[in-house]
Length: 493
Image 1 (tube, rainbow, N blue to C red):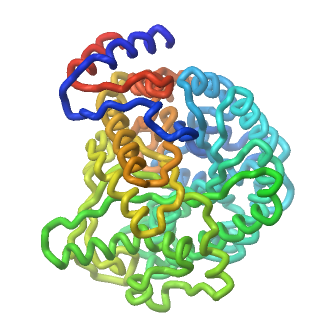
Image 2: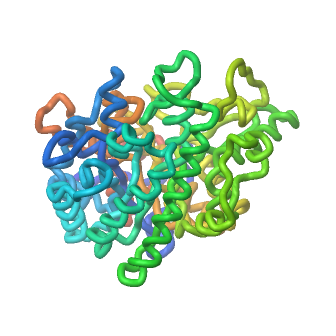
Image 3: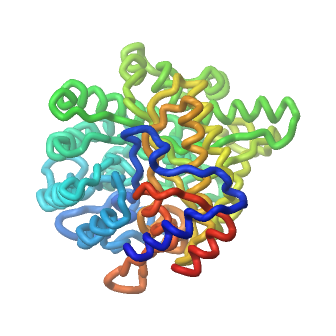
C-alpha cells in the first residue's frame, strides 16, 4: 500500500477548483483528537455458533426473515489479527467495536464463557500492542435471546440489573486497556426500530401491515427507551464507584442524530421541526443533561411516557462523560401527516420526516452543513458536552469509490469548522472499516473502506480508494480534492 500512499501525497497536493474548497490536514485538529473506524460484533465477527456463543435477538430477527444473517459475516472472530494489521497500515488511532453479550455471557446472566472472554482479551491486546486505542460499545442491538424469551428484554426493568452485571464483567476483564466505553449504540433508533416499527431487533410492534407477532408501538418504544437510560445510569454509577479511579476511563451514550429542517417556510413546519428535534434529540439528551424528558413529549404522550423518580432523575442526569453521535444525512420535516390507528412514535411527534437519502442502494448526498448543524444544536441546546462522531459514512460498492472520498472529506471538514466554532468534538470514526452485514441492507450495501468478498470462503479484504485517501489524511498529508486531483488519484489506483 505504501507506494500508493506516496502517489496520493503528490496528486492530492495539487491546486484545484471544485465543490470541496477547504484545505486542511490532520494537523489542523486539536492535539489528542482521535481518528478511527468502526464495526460491531454481529456485523463483523461471524462464528455465531462457535466456542459457546448463543443466539442474540439479532440472530433470531435475521433468521426469522429473509434478510440474510451474520452467521459468518466478515469472520472477524478468526481474522482479527489480519484486520488489525490493516488498521495499522491505514494509520488508525482507534478502532470502535462492540462486545457480544451472547458470546461473553451466553445466557445473559450467570457463567462467563471463557472462550468468548479470551477472544476479546486477544483482540484488545492485539490492538493495544499495535498502538490502536480500543473504543468499546457495550450494546449494539444484540442482547441474548434468552433474556428476551424469559422476560421481554428491554421492556422489563429486570434488564437493568442483568445489563449492569454484564458490563461489570467487561470493566473488570478489559478495563485496564479500554478507556472509552459507549453503553448503548444509537439508543433512539434502536428503540424506534425495535419497538415501534418492528423492522430491527427484537422486531416488536403493533402497526398494521408490519411483520410483528408481539408488541405495542404506543408504549413499548418509550418503556424500552426509559430502561436504556436507567441501565446506562446504573452502569455509569458502577464504573465511577468501582473502576474509574483505577482505570481512568470514561462512559458515553450513543444516539443517531439527523439535521432537521422545515420543508417550507410556514410557521407550522417550523414548529413541527422543533418538535421533531425534541423527540429525536431531547428524548434522551433531556434526561442525560437536565434530568427529565422534554415538556413537548410529556404533554403529547402523557401517561404512556414513563416517569423518573427523583432519585432516578439525579442518577441519569450527568451520567454520560461524552455523547457518541452516529450521523449520515439530513431530513426535512412537514406538519402534514396522516394517522389512522393507534398512536405510535411518529403520530406522537406529529409530523412527517423525509430523509435526504431516498434509496438504501445509492450513496448519500454530500451535505456537510448537516454535520455542522447537529453539532451546533448540541452545543447551543445541551451545554456543549464532549462529542465523538462514532459513525459517519456512505454506502458505495465500487472499489474506486470517489463519491465516498468526497463525502468523507466534506464531513471531516465540516467537523473541523464546528470545532473552530466552539464544539467540543473529540473524535471521528468512519463507518465502516470494512464491508459488514448491515442491519437493513444485508450484504448489499458496502460502507467499508475495505471491500470484503463475501463469496470467498476466506472473506478477502481489499482496500478501496477511500482507504488510501483516509490513510493519506491520517498520516498528516494535506487533503486537497477537486475534479483534477480526483481524476489523477483514480488513474493511479
